[in-house]
Length: 427
Image 1 (cartoon, rainbow, N blue to C red):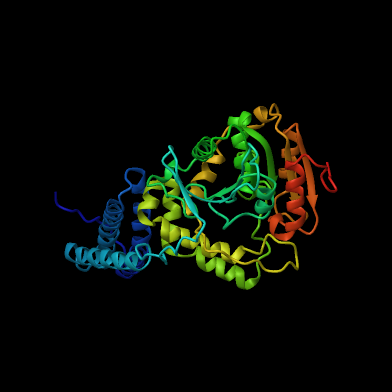
Image 2: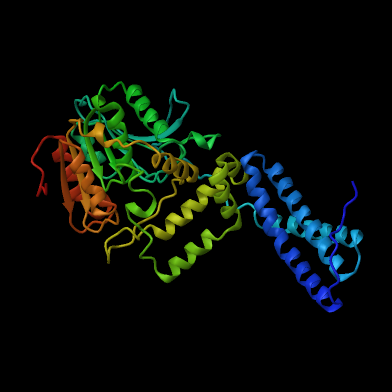
């Protein structure tokens, strides 16, 4: 079928040339944008990056032919040959631009050596989980203690604060990297990062340890995960500790509604964060996440985006402390970008767990730091929902209580787990 160039009425030559020039400029400016739109829109149908690229170029070519042909007709020059030349030049330009932006890999350093003491579980869920263990001293108690890190996707490193003291009291202590984070396995299908998967992994760990009941200590998101495990398996929890817990119900406190840890960045930190957030490949992956997470993962893999998340964490590692607190030391246990993004998305779609949790009679200790960025009502909801819970306010601590007040934190853990009076309780 022959291509028909739009015809225009009898405008004065100067007006036609001006309109043609403007339309030509619009064509040049618009082509890369429509190529990007076509690239993202194609993700509704496929996760293949090459097919996304072809779709983007096809849309760009269509726009260049239609608008460029109309522009040349107004200018009274060229016609089909000029339109074809313009289209070819624009497609080459779009391809070159994509090659140095969206298709240019971000830094992805190789993983460092695994520290001594890190071991691995191969769970029946399919997860390969990295963990550390402080064995019980003396006669082991029947309820091992399992620490759950925050994020999702922001693992700790080594035996947590208070872990060795609890081991000295006869508790076997474990801390593990949740699937998709740290040194644990990544999922080939990122849509598999769900709260249900996290709960299933935790219950598989309990069964692997041969424990009928466990003690859970959840930090931040780990507190949210502890609540979800209680909802599903309350009979297998002897006691629960919620340290600066995140939202109890993700749908009620989605996104920054839980609190905003990035408000107190210095100008230099904010500039660095803006630089990290403006990387074209990250922006493309973020857009694809909202359409087809598999396509996002195909474009930008785990190593790239885990490293990006690690760099972001380094920028904000001290923003959750009390004012004037000493800077914290960073560790190199990798972050988990897709575990974070997909688990949070899933968490915000879950049904309200509070009706079930109001019937759960598991002794629970809730700790809140004086300077915690998490809104007070988020923390209070745990106390109001869990019938056998106590809330303790920790002075001089932000979100990371164990880091700011390690001694008080450890004393509280020991007293609670050993059924001793809590120091300075605040109900």
